Length: 522
Ligand code: TNX
Image 1 (cartoon, rainbow, N blue to C red):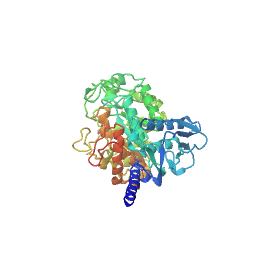
Image 2 (cartoon, helix red, strand yellow):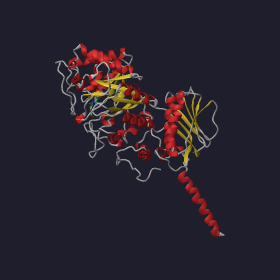
Image 3 (cartoon, rainbow, N blue to C red):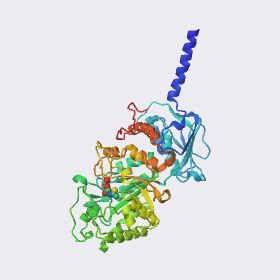
Image 4 (tube, protein in one colour):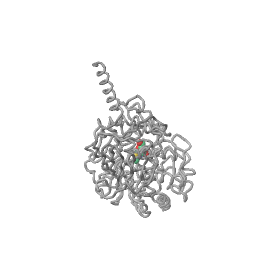
């Protein structure tokens, strides 16, 4: 009898242990990046089953698309074939419900409230963007293997509780330099989905540089025909037709990401100067350039044709750009005399405004006279950022020493540069845009952007090595309040995201700062 009792107890105990090992019940222990503003656990779990569907409120095409994005992410791995359905009533138990309810001021345009009970998953936001960010959270509180592209074994349980979440900054972005090496439409779309997973909302495309012009401009066709024909190291280059570019813009828009196009000027313009001799002060087109040096080229700021050229380019770009900004570069114009540089930037600012857009430029543009709705992107000189603030303009934080995705992690890094130092994963994470430069305060800052210059990388795999695992850290800096951010806590969540990156086939740098688990994706 005693013996039987003992065995029974052991069976019960084992059952309990097995259950706790595979049933998530504490929502606060989930590994969401960026860390949500508030998470309250209610200690139980919801089951995704073959009965579960995704309901969206009303007949909105936009909400259906968001629901479909979630279904497309969950169906391949769960094998559950969740359907997207519309409803005017609260759906029956067992389903996921996405719904817009205005009036929650704290949530703003991008926040969401996610309520998970044993019976249902309810996602509410003021705006569709909030729902879109909320479905990324749903993905992240499911087991990591949900990100695999082939059917995995369930169960698919989600801890119950309530998450209320909204971002600190309205601009959370990354930049891809397609000038030094060209990356095609599919690579850019892939990056856009990666940004979306971390609730980022801007992708800045550096579309022209000394080595290449990458966007079709119909009124100046030789820019891409000749100027787009090579790359760093003498590769074949490439460019986006306006049709392809619009496809990228739309793809990003569907993921609540704004594309910001950059045409760098007056420096970083050799590709344009090589394509049109009249843009050069001496009227002679230079050869195409395939090296890595910077600061040797300039548009001829004294010729009227230069402003006709810029007006045409900005007009065509503005027509392709639903977002508010055109980026005008303005960095490292070492061969443009400062007395020419200042009026040049002022005039280009007027051109951009005339085409209905706002200016962003690298921090040097603060040497000119900025309008209050222009933005200086701080990358190198704090004094330029401070000058922008003094003029009432805003600052975008991309300090090279903290936020450049093309800096090596350490001396062993396979790709990248080190002119701004090494940026290990902890260094990339451990800084606060609002206190980095005391004179640039939170109210002066529109957000954060992590730029990726592409001199040393020319394919998706090598790009990912530089982007991951640093990108999630920049996403968290842009989204999560500074007082909720902590490296040790972040590091533990990043371990779990190592599994997710593996599941998504992302080639990330296995930094020694993070205790990655080497076993299979759970
Ligand atoms: C500086 S950052 C540049 C780029 C280079 C980068 C390399 C900036 C505004 N200008 O032209 O690609 O360094 O890290």
